[in-house]
Image (tube, rainbow, N blue to C red):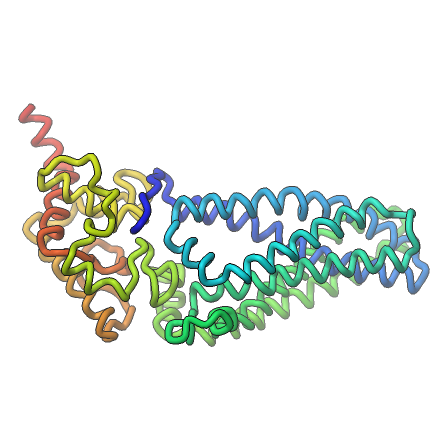
Length: 399
């Protein structure tokens, strides 16, 4: 709310998802691939097996390209997108975990250096020296995952951090270890799957079959770890989150928060609801009303930009026009009033996160409560009514 909203027709959350999912697939292979190649080359050196060593060498170029090129670019892409779409949450993560990010970036630098060194020193250094390099890579890559998992899981289950604001309470939150086990399993499975494709290029069947069996072990271990981690992760979710994630109409588990029980998806903190209800949201989000005229509709548009535009577009993703269209104009102000009242339930701690009765009428029950003064509520209602198709048609006919 302190920062302007980046309006995007496809929705900011969708953009983050596209970039983040791509990066997650790549980064998890980079972690698991490094570990798998380290194991394979270790076995090759101990058994003096040239076919296994050739497999490690054949796979190392893809590891370099994935880790140091695509992984790095997509990682920067995540920072760009979250900074534009969720600047308040990004700022909170940086301020709370600056030393965690610094450590992760340090491990990533070590990861890039050892990956390049590993590929450049094939047949140029002693085998055991080469093994030290790839094991350093595997360690650095996995430590990046260990740190990132703490920060990401904190956003869903901050746990005791809500009371202590302690770095370690935030990192070692309730879903940290289950999520780490889940991610480790995914890393192993992705590595086994890719290296199996590389192993199939081996022309000698007697050498190919043991390779595939070894890599099948990575995939089986990965599936078992991932499944166990998932079930453990599901078990430690708070009841309210589990109800969202596993309910009759399951949704992504953080709604309506970006940092669970701390910051809503529009950047409003639970701790500032009472103050904003007295002063008004536009007293804080001064950027939203800048350049607007003094009309009621213009003020309502500013409130919409401050509180709603982080999730809703006008005609694109989660179109507010489509959501408002079936609502009776006489009921709209009452619905918004109920949403404002729910803000007090967050402040007093009586809110159960099971859904908003009022917004059930909009068929989207997991929005943040409406925060601000009664005058801002009325202005928002006036603006939303201008988006109704009947209102647009009447205005066009009048002109």
